[in-house]
Image (cartoon, rainbow, N blue to C red; front, side, top):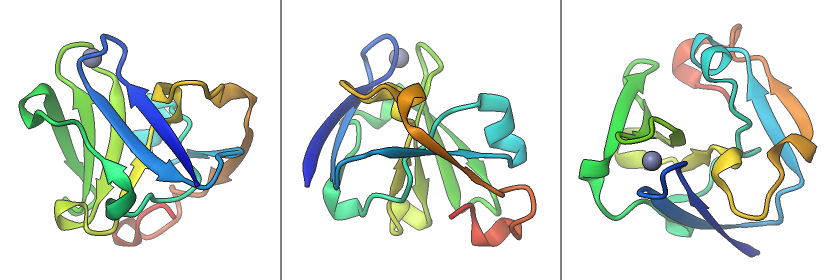
Length: 125
Ligand SMILES: [Zn+2]
């Protein structure tokens, strides 16, 4: 397991997580991911391994997909930081790898998630 630290562009939103070393990233072709074009973590990080930003008032949240996917972004610089899945993120978090220190998101092997044709409620896994 490795410790990863991440931040938004302006640096106000910070978060960290533990994960097996990240060698791959995901892109998804659902209607939301197409627009933000982020490279996502290859899997959801369990809530127990994830430390979200400490001040929720810095974060905007866009609820999507039957309102079970919480898409968090910095209210100041607008950068999408992570997705919390399920109510209160009970199923974990998927992160914007572009926010992660020491990781070149565009150098990773990219897998594409067929989010467009996955039934919306089951999410993009
Ligand atoms: Zn910011």
